[in-house]
Length: 280
Image (cartoon, rainbow, N blue to C red; front, side):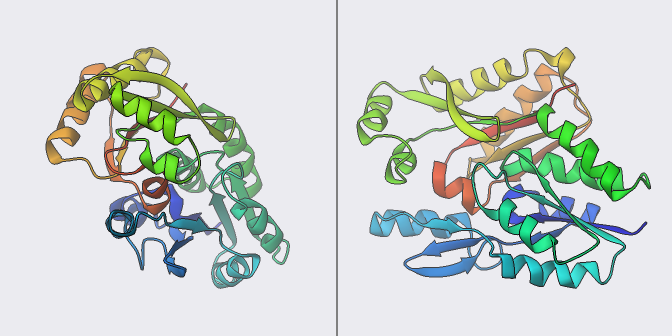
């Protein structure tokens, strides 16, 4: 069967990976100054940072509507035997629910909840592509993905909490306290939602190395075919240090470095970085 894999823009896969796996991206909306922009295509994370710095106001993200999904699904369902769309976790957005409702208009559109975000979501997209290449049925692909999503380990270490505070996801007092104590907070994806994990103390580069080393400490129970290092605007030196640290922890066939899109960047701010991998 000729199966098309599509995804929300929140998967944060690089242009090279999207091209390699022929994935079609459906952009969420980023609302800046009351105007809607298409994520990836019309607005970039640096535009978000500039706006926050200049105005002190946050941007926000808006889900694709049922009508948006119907429009996109109509285009691809007519060209392919089946379309499998992988959504941002329904714990973060109504995108998944809207996509499910839109898919009811078609006989060959399947919708999968990644139960994740950023390249945790991206792992599910790539897995879908690889399964589609094996020639199995769309329903079997969906069934396998439902099991696979529970194996994705996604987390990030934040250099600053003011974006979370501005967005109402933590108190300004907590953000100030973390800043004064030089705490770097790890945010983990659990059960399709997000929660605070370990707090690291010290300079960001030191905390980043400690975070990566701890996340990958159980290397024997981690799939080594691919791992993502996803960041929201690190310097080249910090990216290199992150890559070198991952290499010290284990021998991965593919270490993909990707830049987080507007969704992660708008909520976490600059110098957020995560290692996202698959457990066995």
